[in-house]
Length: 112
Length: 112
Image 1 (cartoon, each protein chain N blue to C red):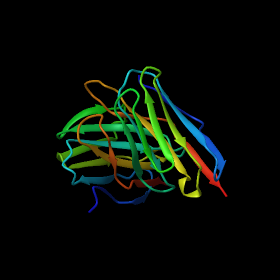
Image 2 (cartoon, each protein chain N blue to C red; image 1 turned 60 degrees about the vertical axis):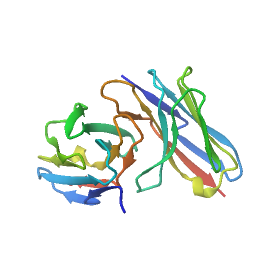
Image 3 (cartoon, chains in turn cyan, brown; image 1 turned 90 degrees about the vertical axis):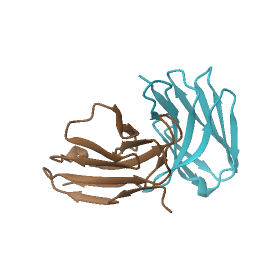
């Protein structure tokens, strides 16, 4: 069974600081997604990573994928308060009944 | 135009009642899902349908019965509601199985 673990589960950081969220998964997969969820809201797709070594950047967020290490990272550069949200990675198991298995989520709080 | 829409947004009901949640997507996707998000924000897949056919049923109690009248709709009917069913239920769709999923706004179900 595919397991997806994120760490940290909770992250409080000051504005202007950098930090990385890690997503480890247990089974071979070449598709990984990052989502953002604001409190009481739906999930918004941030990044789609489809191959080993893929790197995507949008504003202060950068995501990467290492399929050999079964690891994805979401790097935050010079955090701002607007980035406060819960971030999920989701991994697609490449099988006959593919589905997205979500990580535990990382709640990010950016303080002034 | 809302891509994935589900109704109602909020649902408060008594134990033992039967309730339904409706979901529609206008993205032309083949695959639709129901996810459950518990109080700790953990997201777990319940069902997946591909072109109206049930693909995944993740050991969900028989009280939960999905129905897909066509590939743009996936409804969820819940019988004999229990306190433990309280959660946020998200409908999602994706072009194919295991590809990027787009989520509805969620239905917050509270069983009292």
